[in-house]
Image (cartoon, rainbow, N blue to C red; front, side, top):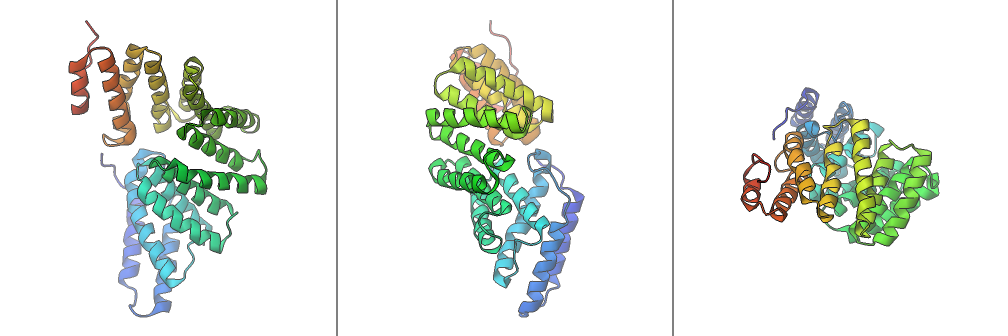
Length: 330
């Protein structure tokens, strides 16, 4: 699905290209000056939400510019850690790469940025830790949770040492660690961590804070892994309601929160209820994020599985060919 690119992003892209076209080849000082100007031009871009699929076309263009510019900055010795607004842009780019199913380039870019910023602003600087967190998230997303685990652990330790256990950044790091443990199937360890994180998040941040919602979703995943399906379903439904309340019923977060509900219903043997959730979700998540988005593909796969469990093989065969016209079973 093609989305329009924000005009401010298009203008910045053109400005950066023109800066390099006018640069004087073979003059290192002039090239460094152009790099600084390009860096500062991108840093002045308006803040776009990387969790909103409507911004992804713009971020794809910004990402290409940032990737190229970072290579030039390294070559000329111009720091990528300054100004602060450029660091913030790079962090948003890393978030976009993670959310938009581009974990492989996200991991490569995050590793490069993390190393540069550790040298220039220190390993415990908040932005360095966010870059490390983005690296671990991309490793986790591409299926390398064992490789992500020590990075998540290090971020959690450094944030705790710098800010204390109940700081919002530390709580987010604990959430990420809990999600990683779930993925590694250490459900008992994850349950202990996630239970404690939910308690601390609710006390420090409130029930509707995004970090608290994430911690609650992680706890539901731990309960699911431990076979406590009824309790998991209750939490997954609560998480979905909170996402709707905080960000709206058509936000990607609210739509994706329905996956846990559908998976748990299917595991409980309520295949018709699971089918109804997935059938209603499929066109909405496709409209929001596109046909090839992982959440869309996963919803199709779950729907096919529901239909086959119900003996509705003809409809199941149609699922990957498009959004079928679902009829009630005879």
